[in-house]
Length: 270
Image (cartoon, rainbow, N blue to C red; front, side, top):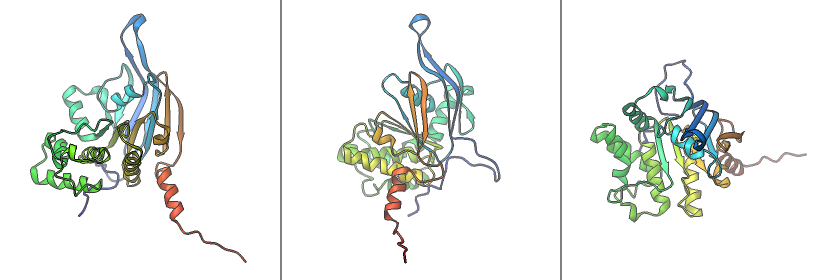
């Protein structure tokens, strides 16, 4: 069965044209409150995430990483600066347009899964397609393809309480994928999982990125950040570290290391 997800999907580009970055942020600021009580959550942040990248944004509580997540996810608006999502200037959109962009361009994965409790895995995954006005037969094809992609084709009729935590998060990943978004945005995706389930979910992200998915993970865990190709650390609303671990067009570090370990070594000698 074909998954229906092409390499690097998320928007058509004319032949020969250069596709804009998945995320392009310049001089971003966010201030809550006014006067002496004002809180500067972000202080002039610049960040460019090309398509195919895999970025972990880290920071302690109060660093600004949750504010960054909300702005990247079009759930909040900045006080100043610019934000383009797949070439779309987000600051120029009204709330109705933002809702459409969130549905079509961003696949969200949350710490708490956010699955509807009395609804099957299949129905949870097809929900963004329902909101997007996709017809029934096409919804079914794409929802089943997404569930197959995350290894849950045998759990389509199960309710969330019939699934393990790791399986529930994989349903959430399938739901994030079903619209073939420009960006997968994951907020502490392993925060409610045990070690084994965390390993499975991050391995899934690694494989999705290896076939072209653009992923931004918000996390406070170093071992989770080590899966990404790029490590960005926030302190007091500023980026203090932006370190690349693997090239944009390469494999994620842990997946690349596993591939190297599986490659037979040719021993030469006289």
